[in-house]
Length: 109
Image (cartoon, rainbow, N blue to C red; front, side, top):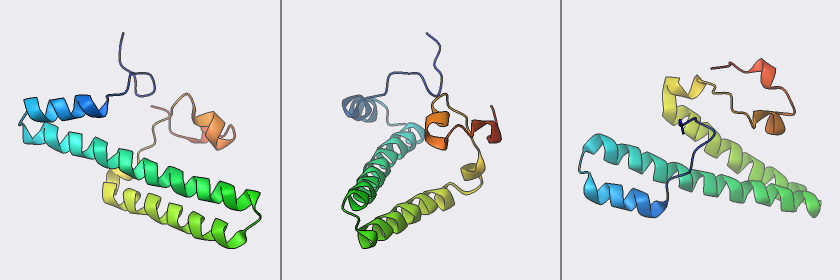
């Protein structure tokens, strides 16, 4: 089966640890660290999105604004960290469900 960016079996944390032990190559280890880092970033972003959701349910504007600012700051930090690569848009098959069907505005690769 050919690998595609939106259709593959994710690598487990155990697999990443095993790769780390087996392969001392610094480039591969940097890539492993990047995967682990982004998993943590996603986990924190998900928690902030849940706070927004709970704030909406409770009609708590302060909670919504605080969590939204935190989430936006986290995403902006990642965008800045990536530098010029942060501007590349990859269109995934699932983008439409998150963008309200506006995928036609994205760069198709």
